Image 1 (tube, rainbow, N blue to C red):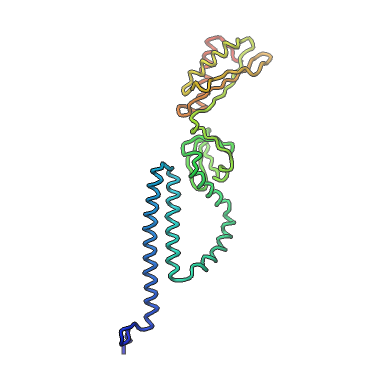
Image 2: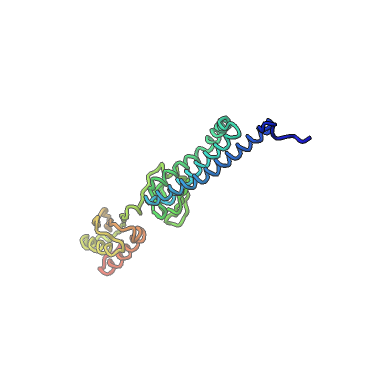
Length: 265
């Protein structure tokens, strides 16, 4: 004789209770997961729009959006699993393992934290020319662990973010101006005033030259057969770079010295 699913009064048979409970837990967990995914997508979308209105960098937008999205999804997964077993005890066990793994990955986590700070504070952006840790170059890429830059001689240098954050950063692009320094030696018989005027005229012809701060030409060393002078002038880094400006200035100085019959030592 077949087993009935209900009693005579219509109430469910006891053996169905675990099945119904499991089905209920499964549907509830599924609902929580779906809700958390849609909620994560909605909240991260609102955050992205708000950050774009505030003109935050793309790196910061992506970072914060992903952190919020995965935090909500993680919370949803934990809540869903709670329907089947005690997640607290499970997480406590994971905590011990996590501590061990975290200690082993300490340097990686430091670089990750430094990457977050760099993306939020933005001491430099992709395309900026900076000097830090004795390297000068143009930023090519910034991620959560490392920063890639291309040096002036074409090398690609990848440094950990924690190292960059722990050292002074000089951003030439953000300043929009940079001082150029060059040294020239002329024979002892040269007239200082004439040489100074020729050098000033030459550096004023350099593309990107700016009048303020004012350029200077200083005679700093008198030797047995020559006089050494140093010229200081400022350029607009949006127009040119220090190496191009220095090359142009020295080329023009040589041409003007030859025309004025000033001998270079």
